[in-house]
Length: 213
Figure 1 (cartoon, rainbow, N blue to C red):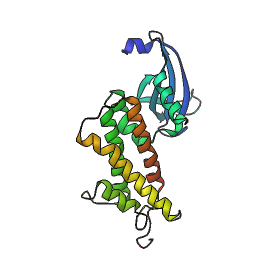
Figure 2: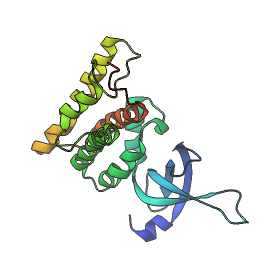
Figure 3: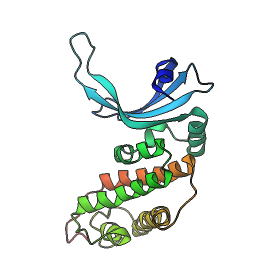
Figure 4: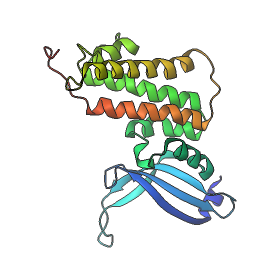
């Protein structure tokens, strides 16, 4: 839609928010334009800024990090996962993937989502550049020696998570790296949700002592 059409908003309503009250919340807004027969959902990162004397608290301004798509597509995603929108996206996914989804570069969006997993793990454990891919992930989450492994859970669960993160990384990232994949919005979002969930686990994981295992 061009700027003239976008300016003619019939109604808009915030239907969900991730990180409410934070410095950069993500808002889910239902928008209906007069020139469009269908409502859209706008998922966008906002920037908090101090308000002036007339404002009641801080103000939030929309950024360019976001995308919009028909509400019917949004409902397909919601119905499939049966989750609240706030649980969908890690902030790094917003930064790396939303603009690509908006421009329908679905393969690139998935690649960036899983690249974010790799770079986040490398940064957190201080691994060298030559350690990458599943070798890097297994160093971090090996059930017996991993530097990010949660030794407070049973061995079977540690095994399962290590296999899960390595399997998801290989299954979702590698094909798009080596060949063209036919992918639509929902297919890409399926994979990005997995990456978002893994990023949250990485973020909450604590570094173990070298002699932990």
